[in-house]
Image (cartoon, rainbow, N blue to C red; front, side, top):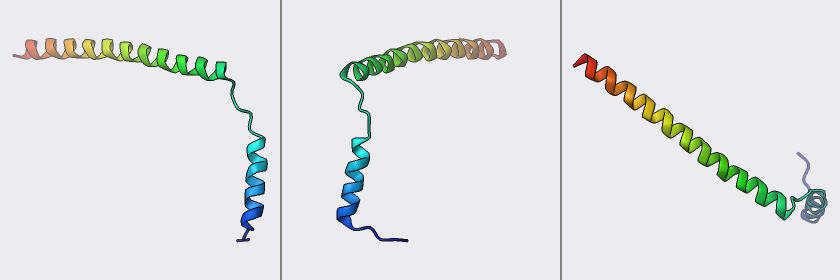
Length: 65
């Protein structure tokens, strides 16, 4: 494995970081809002699924008693 001079490493790293296209403030806010909205939607969905499974299990247990 070839060793790289620390100064050369920093130059290469700086060069690669300069190629990064950073998101705009609007893009960050929009994607953050989308993540929170989807988290709420999935929380509601899985709450309903949980309620349905619980009701189904209660019915099965009541019928077998």
